[in-house]
Length: 136
Image 1 (cartoon, rainbow, N blue to C red):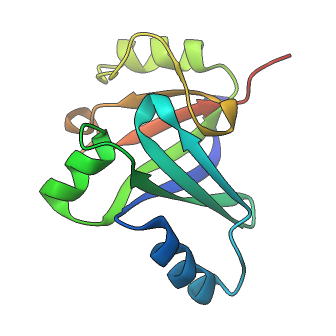
Image 2: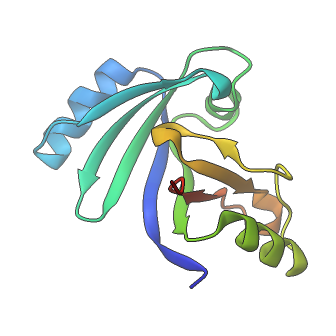
Image 3: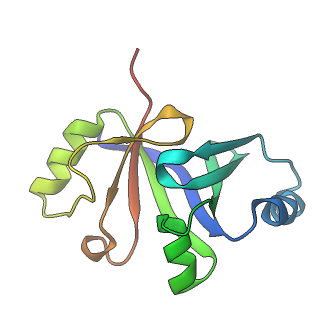
């Protein structure tokens, strides 16, 4: 099964503290986790909504993709992440289908998951993230 479900929706924000307060009011519940992903230059916060998560992303460096995104487009939806069983097989399948991968190897993302992004120019302007739980 290629794509299993929407794993999370990533939202680029300027202030994790202010946005956590806003989304806690909106969802009527508190975020369950804050995590810094040094490699990507972001701090993240997660809300669980059913089987899907909302990930708030605050840039921690000016060079991070989130910082550049906010500078260009402002705060808002950054990406949609889909859970996959085998990220390597999906990356190969999608590349064979003509999609452009932003990396040739999966990276480590939040929750220590394997992740890979598809270039939005190949997905009608949507930044798509593949994510897979690490297999023990």
